Length: 398
Ligand SMILES: *Cc1c(COP(=O)(O)O)cnc(C)c1O
Image 1 (cartoon, rainbow, N blue to C red):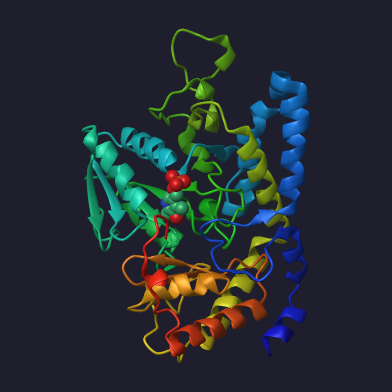
Image 2: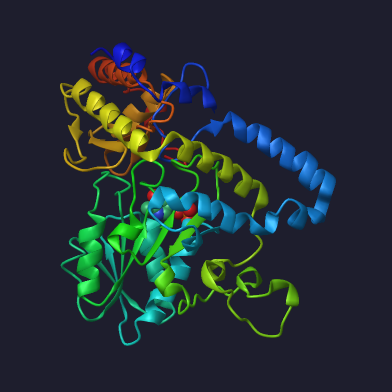
């Protein structure tokens, strides 16, 4: 079938109109910052004018701002195979990693090791190193993290989908291996939630974090989420014991007492405007159905792989087997090619040292967009259009 025929047969085609996408742009970076849903504009305008502007502080009760972290967490839960009371929205991924790693170490007294995958998203390693700097742990960054598990391992921290290559870990197998070693597993779902079906419950997972501003389209800097399996919640202690995680924040009691359940993962006052934007994004993705989204994403990536197969110097750095919703390619001139693509309206990104990364968020991309992006990439490489001084200049954010 031609790309146009694939679009005509696409049962998700209607969803593109739910997003504000600029004319002339093919957006292949929804895995880094999801685009703006139209419904978010309307919702935020109402929250700002009516709730903040009109009802002021009474909105915490009247509009249940106070319940929003748990409410939005409960809406994320079905996307990741969790129960509604196992997920809360709070803080950033990095801060949630700190809370969950520290909590995991406390659950495995006598074990000091955090095992991370070498080549995983840097903040995951950095946060583990921060915990180690407090004298609480040592960090093992391993090429084969499962092989590195032993009776010194308290927790294995791993992305389900690698941010660079899109390699997809087998959650059930890895979780079982960690449990056999007596360790807990902390899954980072940042590049899988909203793009692939995730089954934390089916895998027997312990802990997880994930990102709100990527495939969930929560907006720049949207808060992240944290998952703690129900069986661990009663014993789970995290050290960022802020008042919003207290059992009775408005009792203003003398000492910290954790809220029952997932509420103890909260720390300070939630960012209400960002939370409301995230809620819209989550509802939109949940409504489209993650199985349908994953199937379309696979078809989009396969079309792109085929369409760029003959471009000289470009090699696929993503697996042909199970993978996430983005693709990585190596090219010696990746940075300049990426800038030249952006100048032509094809927005992907560059990851050091030589990776071109393209996200295929299935909610709004058309097969025709993907074919056009591949044709523009082929033309830029064939004509050398990337080799201009302005495309070589490094910017702060790549
Ligand atoms: C995007 C991403 C993060 C982001 O962390 P923040 O603290 O929210 O900036 C963390 N881990 C992974 C694997 C990611 O892909």
